[in-house]
Length: 259
Length: 325
Image 1 (cartoon, rainbow over the protein chains, first blue to last red):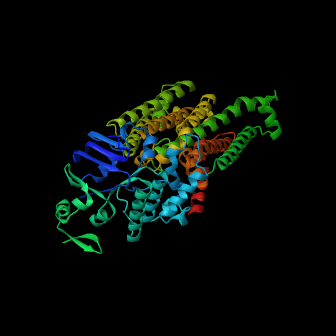
Image 2: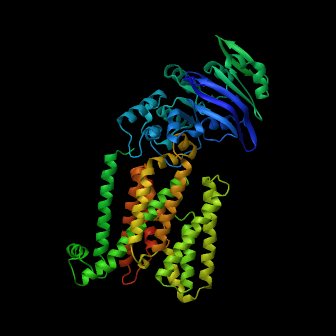
Image 3: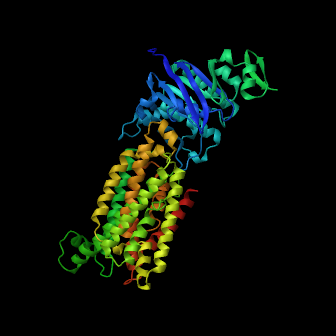
C-alpha cells in the first residue's frame, strides 16, 4: 500500500462507545480529492467513528492511517498538520476575538516560543474571508450567532490547513446559502488542493451532490461503503432512516423526500 | 492577540507597579519613613532602627505577601483553564481545606509556627493526592469529575475544620480564625514561596499557548496537536503546588486567586502567554497593598489581610465588569 494518493485509510476498524458498536471490520480508503459523506440515524455512531478517524477516540481494534501512517503513532502536532477535525460546538467559557480564535489553527506550525506572525495573520484573514466573516474579525466569540460560530470554527480549520478534513455536521446551524457555500468551499478545496474530506451529513441529496463516496451506518456495527452514485438510492436510504423516502430529480440534481 | 512587544511592555509596567507596591509596604507603618530613608534602609545603608524595621520586619513580610499573592493568582488562572470554569479558584479543589485541617490540628495540639506550617503543607498535599486519586479513578479524568471530587473533598475538610474549632479551647480560637481568614503576620521566611513562584511561572509559561487551546475544550485542543492528558497533569500539579505553598505561608487568603485572573482577563484579554505572568505580578502587588492597609487602618492592631483583599477586590472587579458590559 504505497499509493501516495491515499490520504485516509481505515483497516479492520472496530469502534464502539458506551457498549454500542459503531462499526466493525470497517475498511475503506480515501484518496486525494475524494469526499466522503457519512449518513445514518441519530445514535448510530457517526460522531464516534469520526473521532476515531481523527485519532481522538481509541478504536477497539484496527487502524486508521493518515497519509500512510497510523494515527496512533503520530506525534500530536504532526497529526494536527495532517488531519483537522471539526467537532460539534459545546460553548466556550472564555471569550476571545474572532481573529484570535481563528489563529489557534496555526498552533501545529508554531514552535514553543513562537508568536503568530504576519504570515499566520494573513492565513487566518484569508480563511475568515472565505467563510464570509472578514468583517467580524474583532467581534467577541460570545457575541456570535450559532451559524456565525460554526463558520468561525470552519475558518479555524482552514487556517490549520490539514490534508484530511474530518467534519462533524459542518452544516449545523447554517442557513441554506451558507450550507451550500460551505459544501462548495470544500468541494473546490478537494479538487484544487488535493485534500480529502469526510463529513457527517443529514441530507442524502446534498451527500449525493457534493460527495463521491458514502458510508451508511445502520447502527449496531453494520456499515456500507461505496460510491455515492451506487449506494445512495431510495430503498437503501429508506432502510437506513427507517422511513420511506422517494427520489426526485430536477435539472440533474436529486433530492430525497420523506413520504 | 497581543504582540510579543505589547506583552513585554505590559509586563514591564506591572513589574514597576509591583516594585512600587513593595516600596510602599516598606515605607508605611507605625514608624513612617520617607522614600529616601526607605531605600537607604532596604539596601542596608541604614544601621539604625529604620534599617532594622525595614530589613527584618517589613521586607520579609512584603516579599511573602508578594509571593503568596502571585502564587494564588497564578494558581487561579491555571485552575480556571484546567476546569474550563470561570468560577474556579485555587481553593475549589480542596487544597486550602486540607491545609486548614492540618494547620488547625497543629494549633489545637499547641505546635509552634513551624509545626503549623508543616502540618498545613501535609494537609494540602493530602487533599491534593486524595482528589487526584479519586478523580483519576476510571481514567477519564473529566473536568466535571475533577471539579465534583474537589468540591466534595473541600466540603469534607470544611466539616473537619468546624469540628476542630468547636472542640478547641476558647483561647486558641482567635489564632485559628486569623489563619482561616488569611494573615501574613504568620509568614516566616519568604524565600521558599518566592522560589516556588519563579518555578511555577517558568514551568507554566512554556505551555501557555497550549493552555489557550485547552481552554477551548480538550477534544478541540487534541485535534490541534496538544497532548492534553500530559498538559492537564502538569497544570493540576503546578496549580496545586502553588496553592499549597501560598496557603502554608499565609493561610487561606480569599479572593486573590479568583479575581486577579479575571481582572487581568478583562483588561488584557485571554492569551495565557500574557495572562499568566500578568496575573502573578498583579496578584502579588494587590496582596502587598492589601497587607499594607491591613497593618495601618486600625493600627496598632492589625486586620487579617484576607478581609481587605475582598474589600478592595470586589468593587474593583464590579467596576471593570460593568465598564465592559
